[in-house]
Length: 223
Image 1 (cartoon, one colour):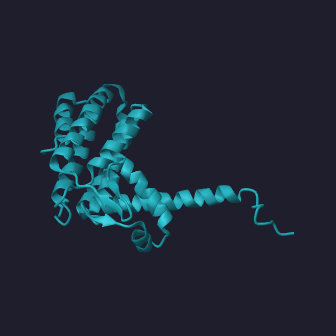
Image 2 (spheres, helix red, strand yellow):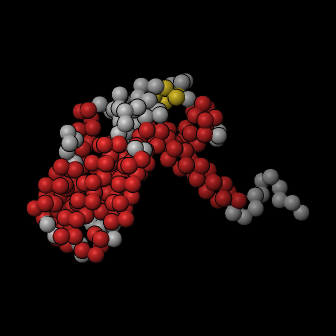
Image 3 (cartoon, helix red, strand yellow):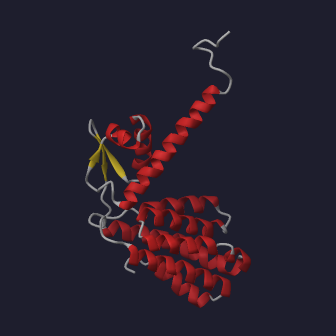
């Protein structure tokens, strides 16, 4: 006998939740990429139904993803209209860079003396990936590979809370301020990726003096 509408097969509810969570996660990733690329422009208002149509999904997972982006200070709710993309000005980006430096720089310098060389060497494929993506000029692609490299470095600390907080700050710092979208970022991305390779070389060589200079430069918002 077929199950009644009120008696879903065992595990059906769990599968539905997983599928819904998966769609929401995919939409969230897509929206973050659109922010990083400047496809979602600062100051513009976007409705959940319109974005849902763009991504081929209903408005519900878009709204849920946008609510997460409000928590990340990427968008704000505009009643009866949708969500406005917030502008990140130079001052806010500089403040984010300063906070990231306060968190990451001392941790990385401490890890330089405690993490075995072979564990730093194992991160080279991630650093090389940032160089390859930087060469393509893809801002969204670089944002992802850049976060992966920094996440791997900080994970060597074993401090999950630090990794989570630093990752959130890193993501917020990758959304460009007004006017950046449309300008070719390739040169800046290549410079940043080159820093990753240089950082690894310094870690492997145990060159703390060179490392001090590199980490400070890497987090300098004016660099």
